[in-house]
Length: 120
Image 1: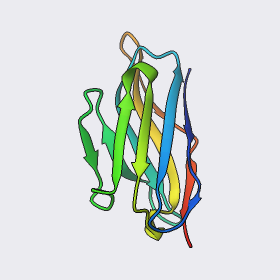
Image 2 (image 1 turned 90 degrees about the vertical axis):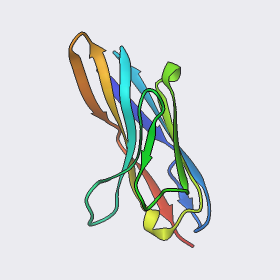
Image 3 (image 1 turned 135 degrees about the vertical axis):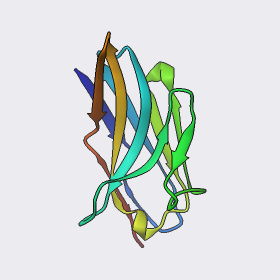
């Protein structure tokens, strides 16, 4: 059993910053890619940022230059630093991890989501 627990969502004014955290726990041998997705009301879930175990990163065009993804492999934790937040960043943010749970045992795990609201 593997769990992802997110934290850090909040109400913030436009131009503000937030830092989301996601910690993985359970039967984990290693974690390959980790990522953050978001889903706004009435919209499909979309990739925000992703990071490999070697810390290669990619971002959606809408957040490039404002958001930074990072991770600590020893702590099975990934963060999303969000700066210069805009109302259109309002969404539930989900953590995702590609977990190696054992020999030839691969799991895709999702967190429960954390709400980010950007509003004045």
